[in-house]
Length: 125
Image (cartoon, rainbow, N blue to C red):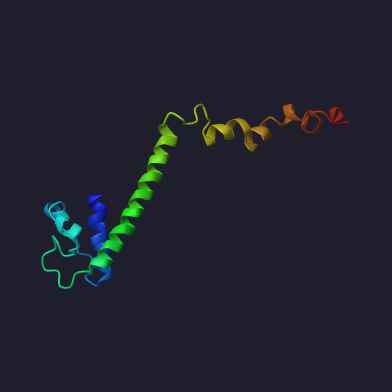
């Protein structure tokens, strides 16, 4: 959430024409109070014309929504992959190809269709 606030502020200042201005590592947490109050220049010394409060909050909202959607998608993927409701005993694509694929069917054609691929001409009739 803290990084979402900082990224939202960076995007807002970028849109306002300030370029990519990042807060120093030691100011990531100390500048949150100013961000919550609507100050887009909090923790960024020497910023000439910071983004407006409306632009700041809009960018923070968009970034946070994207963070929540991405986090939800990642959580669902992790639960589907390793959670209690995952599919167990499923073959990998390479295992399914080895057992059911075209290459095996062609290798075993004499057994599967001896009338078409048998060794002797008499069996075909």
